[in-house]
Image 1 (cartoon, one colour):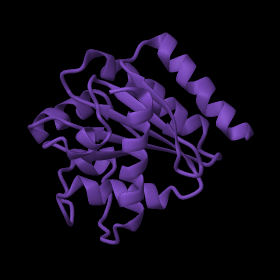
Image 2 (cartoon, rainbow, N blue to C red; image 1 turned 30 degrees about the vertical axis):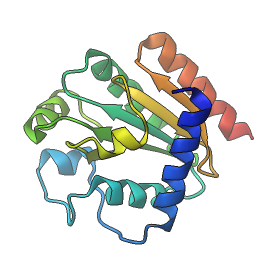
Image 3 (cartoon, helix red, strand yellow; image 1 turned 90 degrees about the vertical axis):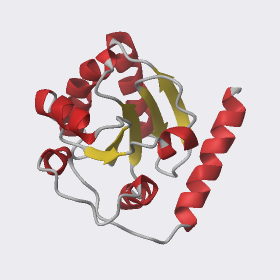
Length: 171
């Protein structure tokens, strides 16, 4: 699948989300660790609410799994971005795709997170975003347009992503 088709597919998904009216509570990493139940288990609804709550913000969407080594490397950087850009219009939404919630909970006990986490064991969101590698990340501008897509993670990728985010603050 070429990038234009992938971006179009993702744009259509956001159009679907923006017209979807059901709402639910989000879960933060801390809430996930305490295993508080969602009002709904539907990750699509949870994602839609998270995106709606971030209206006007730059949104960094990250897909991760407990078995993913590079995901472990990305969490400290995402935590630092959350803190560094706390006074900016910036939101991080992560989606865990582990089949077993216990795996995600174990990962989070070792790799704390200070950003939104959505649990998607059936991969509904991963399929909608055409995720083919872990981690995969997407940057949405303040108008909710997909401006960047990344597969995998290392320190160089992290620096490149941060520069892309900072450029969006200037616009």
